[in-house]
Structures are given as structure tokens and as C-alpha cells.
Length: 136
Image 1 (cartoon, rainbow, N blue to C red):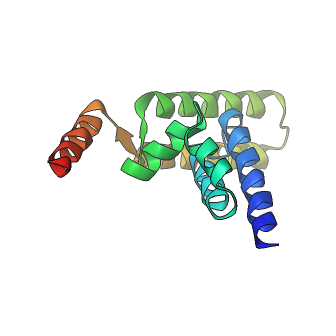
Image 2: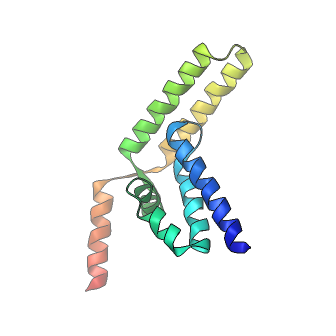
Image 3: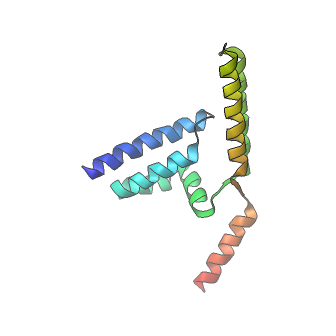
């Protein structure tokens, strides 16, 4: 029963994470982290799959290890966010209050993305050096 609960919740968060890739208001990484945590409790096979997936795995590993995301992900996320928000505000929403609210949401999400530490090559190299020193 507990295993089914974690599997269901894990798939739900995985779906939300996939949607987050395409919808700028939904954050991808937190949902993928939640999904991997649920799969960890429910299925070794699914946990291994999500953490080693060619797309999702990098999000999870980088964020868990460094609490950081690559600059290209930040730029892509912000460009997609603002592109979708501008299209939505200009062509799909009539109410000025809703337009204002979407604009505020876009600003807050942009600030959130910019405040996340940027994963740099130097950070990766420092990690490799510290791993080599620990293995000696």
C-alpha cells in the first residue's frame, strides 16, 4: 500500500516536472527531485531510471550535488518564461488585473531562477579535485 502511494505520487511529480519543461510557471527541478525521492522509497528500478535518465538525470544530480543549475538552463528558462508570458498577456488575457498578476508572477519566478546558484565548470572541477583527494 505504501509502495503504491509513493509510486503514484512519484509519477504525478514526474508528470509535473515534464510539464515544467514546457510551461514557464512550473519549476522542473523541484518536481523531479520530489519524483526521485518517491521512487527511492518505492522502486529501486525507477529511482535508478530517473537519476540516470539522459535528460532528467542531469537536473537531479546537479541540483542534489551542487544546489545549482547550468547557465544555459537559466537562460532557456527565463527566455521561455517571458516569451510565454508576453504571448499570454498580449493575445489571450483581456482582464488588466490578470495581466498584471501574470507579469508579477513572471518577475518573481525570474528572481527565483536568478537566485539559484549557477553550475560552472570551475565548480565541477573543484568537485572532481576534492573527490580525487578523498580517494587518496
